[in-house]
Length: 142
Length: 142
DNA sequence: AGCCAGTTGCAAATGCTTCTCATTTGCATT
DNA sequence: AATGCAAATGAGAAGCATTTGCAACTGGCT
Ligand SMILES: [Mn+2]
Ligand SMILES: [Mn+2]
Ligand SMILES: [Zn+2]
Ligand SMILES: [Zn+2]
Image (tube, rainbow over the protein chains, first blue to last red):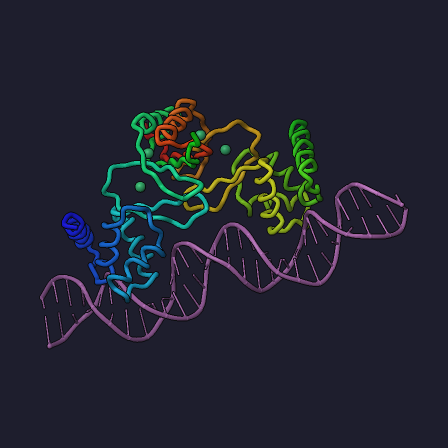
């Protein structure tokens, strides 16, 4: 709670510095994003944001998410046949494992894979700018 | 040319065996798919298929692609903000590098990465069913 | 307090993909 | 070769997530 408040102020600062106004609606969306521990989509964020400020419209959620994405504050994910999902970009880079039975999203990180990807790109004459790695899995039956 | 003809007949056989009728339209779409050396989207496949059979409709392209996908004959890819792209599933598994400047798609395969992915899933208590790995790159300036 | 470009809500538009339905067709059977 | 019928087709409508146009509002700076 304390930290998420600081987080929100930090995010608001980033916006202001980027010449973006911190409106009532954006403050609500930022708070929701900072508090989120999952990977909500726009309509879920809208539902949550309305609890703070009932006037927030879905358009503004989308517009704000796009703005935050451009500022590098938020990351957008497009998992297999699903609507776009979002998370704040404060945590260090990680990839996702999706439980194809429940839809649960689990984060992981493999430095080896990260390195191999850069090597592959280099071998092909490219610089790796970003990547997408998603593991679609089923819980192991033991 | 010779091989692609055989490939088409092979594909038609797979369809027939799966209880799917081989229509004029589907034959055209299969031929186009077998000949394709890139990763065309539905509308591009439609454009190409019409050169063989002008009556093919975009609806049928989509319907046929879905059918072929279910039969495991075709694979669908959803690259970053782009329409779905397709390729036949006869080649061994590989992942893709996308040139973010030109849109070019380059195929690659890393057995190390493939193995690491399975290991990561296992460590988290899951069986890896399928995955998606895309490298978004820029050509190296030397 | 006053200004004004940035922001908003709403509704309409967008773009890809899927669906509906009347009509046609593949193909197994005579 | 003719028949029967479920599967497949074309055309357009519908679906759905996301974006956009616009008139009204407002954050943040004088
Ligand atoms: Mn995450
Ligand atoms: Mn490929
Ligand atoms: Zn990664
Ligand atoms: Zn792979």
